[in-house]
Length: 345
Image (cartoon, rainbow, N blue to C red; front, top):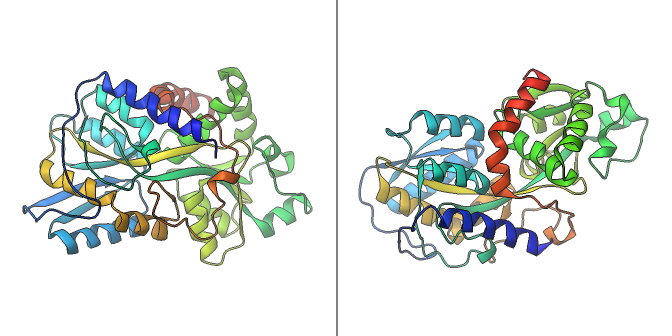
């Protein structure tokens, strides 16, 4: 893994957020949870439903604080958070680090300095607006049987451009980037790897011709590829590892270069239970919760003392694009509007 990439990306976001105002201070240990203060915490998260539920139950068992989970796609949650501005229902919201800057500027999330030991410092925001829990890799899932059938046994693609095969027309599936964080990460990856907008849109124009379906959620393509409805689909690595672990003929392709997202949570400004939210944020970054996330979601950890998911390719072996989370967040609305206009989604 190109370490400077993530250090620079995280540092750039932190600098931008530091300019917004001072961070609040907090305290707490690695896996220590303060005594329950009553009430409940509402957690908006794009994490798959089952892992989110298991995490919520584990936290309640340790703290006595109930966690009410609302699971939707990243895009839907961001829209909900904005719609609830001034009267939020959520205490904690799951997001990619790149989404934190725009939300902080709109005063929809608030800073908080947790003191959780063990988190790799490359993935800590000094301004305290985002709290990393996992690294999410952009990948392509290929149904091995369907690929052989449709391409005559051609080698699996190694790059994004090798996916642009005429014999795959209508055989690809991807999440709608106007609704899904997964889909948007794929689109942003194309902008960063090409280095200019015109080349990125040219690739997306060609890719669109092969897409048979745009799904509302990021997890749907992995399931549709697993069942053979589509030959290949854009997905995060953890979704594909989950379906492959269930025995489906899925091959993971890490196209060169691919994108990586720092995913975590933020505290909602003006939330109903701010103290409970802070305790939950700290617990999610502890060793126990982090290992649960790896084991349940199959994503990559941000802690140095947590094992990688089984079957995952090591980060050091991957070719990663210079994915700028700050720019990704800033251009999201404009890119999403243009995507919807071009492709009618």
